[in-house]
Every structure is written in C-alpha cells, then in structure tokens.
Length: 183
Image (cartoon, rainbow, N blue to C red; front, side):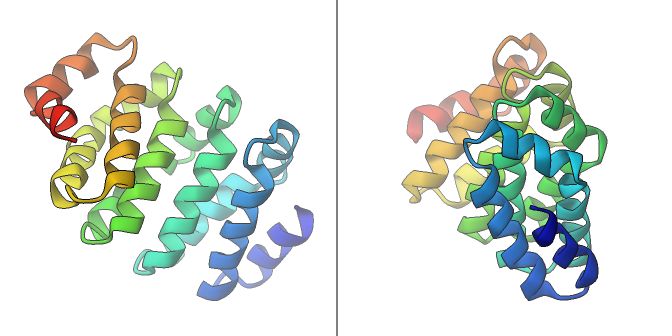
C-alpha cells in the first residue's frame, strides 16, 4: 500500500500511474477491512481524490478512482465519513457530469455512491444535496440498455434512500420509482 501511494505522490501528473494506482487500491481494499483502514490511514483517500481532480478529463481514471473509493468505503463508516468530508461525493458526481456518455464511469460512480452512502446518514444527505439523485436517474435514462448500470443505479438509490424519508420523497418526485420499475 505504501509503495502504491508513494508512486501516486511522486507521479501526480502521470495519468497512467494514477489510473493504475487507483486500480491497485481497488484490488487491495476490496472486501478487506484491514486494508481499507490502512489505505485510509496512509492518505490513500486524499490521493485518489487528488487524482480525480488532476485528471478530470480521463474517463478511465475516473472509473478506477470511483472503483477505488467504493472499495475503500464499503462497510466502513469511518472511511465513508472521511470520503464525504474530503469532497469525495462531489468529485464522484463531477465525474458523472463530465462523463455522462460513458457507461463505465456512470456504472462505477453509482457503485461508489452505493458504498459511500450505505447506512451512513450524513453521506446520504450530502449525495442528495449535491444533486446525486438526479445524476443517478439521468444515468439510468441515458444507459437504459445496460443491465449492470441499472443494477448499480438501483443499489445507489436504495443506499441513498434507506431510512431517509426526505431522500425517499425526492427519488419518488423525480421519477425514480418509475425508472426502478423499468430497470
């Protein structure tokens, strides 16, 4: 983990290094609590977010960064909080806006939103306030033929809505129920 993060620091301007490092962090953190904690403690969240900011136009990097954030966040309330406080939700949503035509970015961003918002009230609120509900619904409409994207969009909406009446209402009013039923 330390060597991957050192490479990210040393080669911040290299899209290729950042992309591969995000892919590595995804693989390292996925379904492994101790690795999630280690990545976060060593500054990995901030480095992934810096890569997203520094290479906003790179579709592939944005996909891998969303994958990495999702793997670091899933089932880890402390990491969900850190990602939210560091501006990660806004950067995931910015990737969705910038790459609306990319099925891959939309799919990975929905998966990341699911992991960041699941069972985390503050993240749920932040996603909704930043326009995340509308972006997930737009992804569903724009990529109606993608089974995997529809699955992750439904997962994201569920994570954003569970236990949050205001978000449930927003999703319903925005046509989310119809899109979920159409998926």
